[in-house]
Image (tube, rainbow, N blue to C red):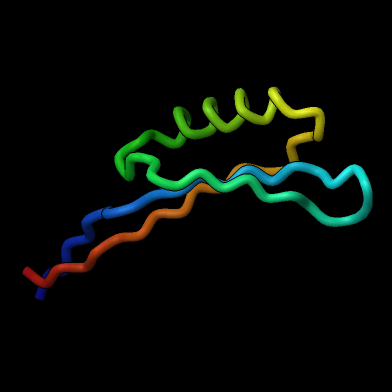
Length: 70
């Protein structure tokens, strides 16, 4: 039995530093194309982070996939 994975949704999360205290602030962007290349997502997230006064902490990509039995 073979299983096929089909990406159906993707979101990009940008974490920036919290200037008023400890921890991080999350900026989440949904409806990212699941087929987007990691380098493209990183580039867009980096550019968005530069528009903020807070320092960039990390960038995350989350993919939701559907599993289908062949």
